[in-house]
Length: 291
Image (cartoon, rainbow, N blue to C red; front, side):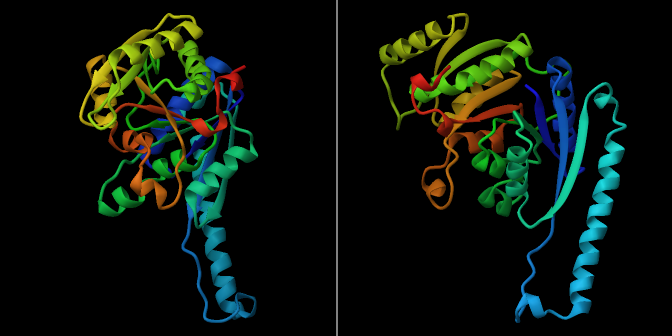
């Protein structure tokens, strides 16, 4: 791991992600890139923007410059944060009308290995419908994302739940989960949740999990769990074993389709009180993609 991207809006929850990234960076030697995407509204004009009156254009440009200046001052002050001492740190900011797009684009630009961000969670109906910035980043990012909803504990992740259906796609994303576990000397629990509307036989599930475990060395705790919904099952199991991190794959659904078949990962991000690692499944189609 060489580069960790940490988006920040300078709120306390965003610093949870920064401190977690700092601890991970100390263990891996990675550089931490702190990024602020300063959101402004789109501007709409009744005439061609190219012929907009100069005073209005100057006013908008001046506002953007002021926002960037403030953001840069705050970013530079973060460099003095105790948790970042001894770590390679870079800072950057930009004006945008779409925060999650700027975050994912910047992650691609710097070739980040991982995005770590704090989460505010859903606080009202609008946020529940549209999703928080963290949910949107999870939905659109190709890079793995760790969402930190609470102040990180020292030592980070010692017990990790990898929740999956253990189909071929899972073989592709698990190596990254295993790497995170190795960095933290963590115990991994392989979890399959059964629900009434997505029932599968125990004997078949056990066979899938045994094959999966054997492929990666077999030193894992394996568990089958039943609940009304997958999200509830994952969260309830994680709570019962006092897990420090939930790892899950996402298909990164976009547009209206997600309202009819919402990714479990987004529900976990919205509801979890412990950190979540989300790895995009689209990058890995079948077992042979695993190297």
